[in-house]
Amino acid sequence: MDSTVRTATRRLGHAGIEVSAMGLGCWAIGGAWTWGENPVGWGETDDEESIRAIRAAIELGVSFFDTADVYGCGRSERVLGKAIAGRTDEIVVATKFGNVFDEERRTWTGEDVSPAAIRAACQASLERLGLDRIDLYQLHIWSLPQAQAEEVAETLEQLVAEGLIRAYGWSTDDLDCARLFAPKPGCTSIQMDLNVFKDAGELLAICDEHNLASINRAPLAMGILSGKFGPGSKLPRNDVRGQLGPEWVQFFKDGRPQPELLRKVDALREVLTSDGRTLVQGALAWIWGRSERTVPIPGFKSVEQAEENARALEFGPLSSAQMNQVAEILAND
Image (cartoon, one colour):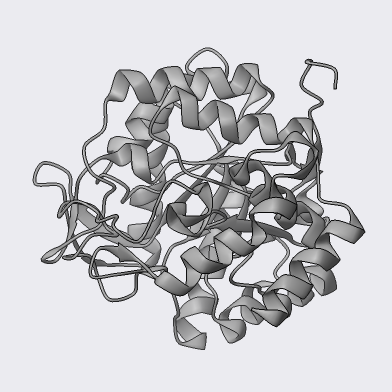
């Protein structure tokens, strides 16, 4: 294969914003922080390494970066802002709002989606990111009552009209919430869990119906699809996947990878690593093969991880035959 990266691009729904077919998720580079009594970061990080990783990914064709104001309680946005300084014209940035946090203590303190809070959060994110406009602004609350969600959408439409954001979306796997935002004029995406182990057919159908992008969190099943974990693996106590992590964490239990998922990794390894891919690159290729609307956003904490993710762009999606192989293996497992 030609060593030159063959950058594939996709559009963020009807907004017409063109991005690399894979983005990088910036949750992990926020470092350690807490949600109540639970750790919800990915352990300690080195900001300079994170900046080098982002810049390395850009050189390899990645143009889309997804973060949230609450990741590291502002730290992720600040690090991303430093990394893309001077290159913002070639980068598409997505961030999220809705959570309230104490930046000094690095802890989540609550939720607020009132119009005033959304506007304040938007301005704070713009400052941390060093931007004058956010490309994609996503609601980061799992579900809301319809009346409250309508008010949020109205505020977001105003921010679009004022030029503070280009488009918006909702990070949720709740079908009713996705359906509520999907037809809104400025809504262009739904962010959802999607990986080899966890499909999202109904959410993808909503994206198809309304011409929305599907932004895919947990594309590597929180690292299990990297292949680096085994039955004896145990995550640190300050890691969201560790023993003290919140109940909503999937794929891990009591700080250890789910045994049945490790078994499935072994069963899928041959097909996912076909054509010279690494296991990570095969897992991302499955997502591209699942739908032309998908934009996976794997996380990273090092230059090596960011480069491995980015080089998945060289290979593109799994073939139809390979997708069928994966489906058959999972069905018979």
